[in-house]
Image (cartoon, rainbow, N blue to C red):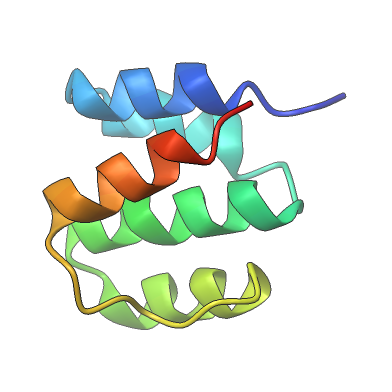
Length: 77
C-alpha cells in the first residue's frame, strides 16, 4: 500500500493533524517520513520531528512551517 501524500498534506492544511498523522505514520518511504517530521514540527515535538526527517534522508529544516508545507507539496507527483 502506498501513502496518499496529497491527502495527508491536505488534511494537515485543514487542521486535521490526528487524521494526517494516522495516515502517514504507517509508511516508511522518504516523502512520508519527511511529511511525518513536518507534522511533528506542527505539533511542536522537535525531537520527534528530527527523528522522522532523518528517516527521510533529511535534517530538521530551518524554514517556516508554511515554507516547508509548500516544499513538501511541490514534491508530490
